Length: 407
Image (cartoon, rainbow, N blue to C red; front, side, top):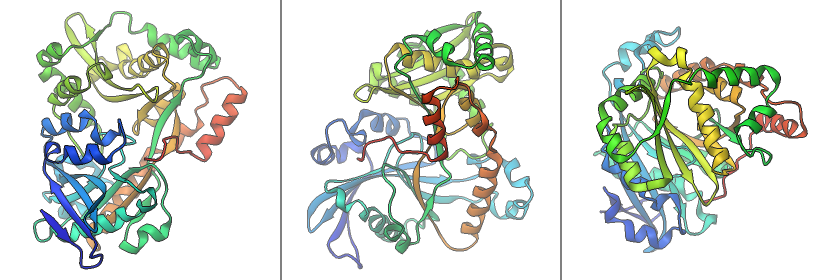
């Protein structure tokens, strides 16, 4: 289907509901190995996450294909937030209005991934057109969809305010992700431990030794299939601890990612005897020599005894060192725990448009409370010995840098 803008007559769209309909066009315009043409897009689509529809959009200017947009349409409802969140002071007034409501949110990017920019323009000078295009796309969807918000997620570069404010978008600068640089002198996990200060090193050794009874198994597709119900249970334990979870996966996601990415995707199971107590998934970005600790799940009944969460982090560090990676992406949550392991905060460049009225007020109020609730204790963590490298790291925390190449 094609749409023509009343504002910019030269811009029009072609939209597909699945990747295969548009794959040839995208492969033609996107650079080799670009994340928007990787098989994990199809893997996610195949698992049919609840309350999410996918849109793949070609952008044409005077009939020439100039760019693409990867969109996720989320039906945000009461399943996506902890109801106790609305019992907080200042938010109780919203409770009667929000509970039972469903809101359509348009996301340019992938809510299940970090550093996954949802658009590409062949001419980088035209990147700011993304805000024009999203505004036009929103208008073209009426009355089929009346989006209450648009999120432009994980942009690889910061935009000038004049490029997005003209369409009512705001910069959302509080979004931080935790990353760890693997130092060149770390040839094994012992080298990592040696760089920790005495207090943190003793703590790490104690945590690792607490898991002596746990078997770590690299799960095959067959094993993932056999453990589907348990994996879903462990994953939902994590989801139910979160105040807000925009996207909720099914356990089939891990199977499809393994089928799609092969050795580029791993799921490690933590077993006590024959019982699966936790799992951790990794994505390996071989050309970049980077890895991501992706989604995890755990049984909180055993978490304290075996330090499951902290061992998941340490095992991720071990994997990165052993596989000669340069960096680990650890995600947005549990900042203090990740800072204890040596991770640093890096700013993400996000932009949001929210429909004027009570929805905008509600989202602003919830966002302020959520950010304040994260606290600042994680900023005080200094696990490594004082070295010249550490001084550079402190500078990075105070003024986060974007490490991804422009895409």
